[in-house]
Length: 242
Image (cartoon, rainbow, N blue to C red; front, top):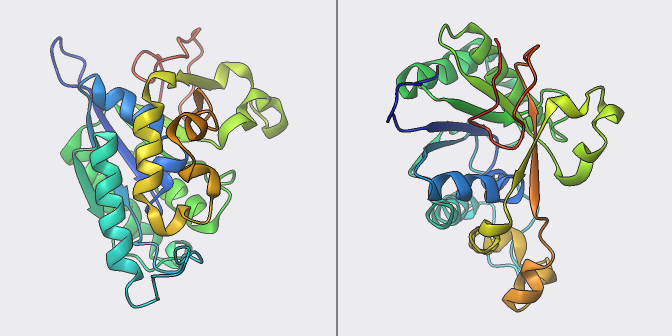
């Protein structure tokens, strides 16, 4: 799964559940690697049509939600530098009930086609939402079945990984990415998801104040751990075994 020849373009495959997962959780990291020339493909399993937020004041309804959230996600991808967006068109809040073998197969086909150096997804039990956990479980299994080398990482929610032992992990399992130079792109992506963020007053403060609300680091759990000491401040330098 990893193309390590000199001069090869570095690639990331991010497999998430909803529009906005990419921005709210790891937008700074995606923007950082995109700015460094990485080729990024984003999968959104759903179009987020069951989201509870409808804008503030509301301007979205159940009928218009899928199209609006798609447009907002495409705008967020532009802000972050994500080159390719793929929807699986699974019904929102139903990923856990989708045929698991078919889902693993679809993700595996993408891995074969894209040959990513890094795969990002949710942890299958720490994802915080049934859709997150289901897409993470399927992606992890697709990764395990793949034959090529590569690195699998689970995106995590902010400062939770400052104390990974609370979740059964150690500091050696955590990658800490410095995204302070890419917070403007992350904030722009937040704002692109307008119907989801208009209720959050801080997002729409003057730029300087809003940027101060964003953390300077994002955290990832290694999904395929190595027995070797790891370089854990760069997703592409972490030396992981299958």
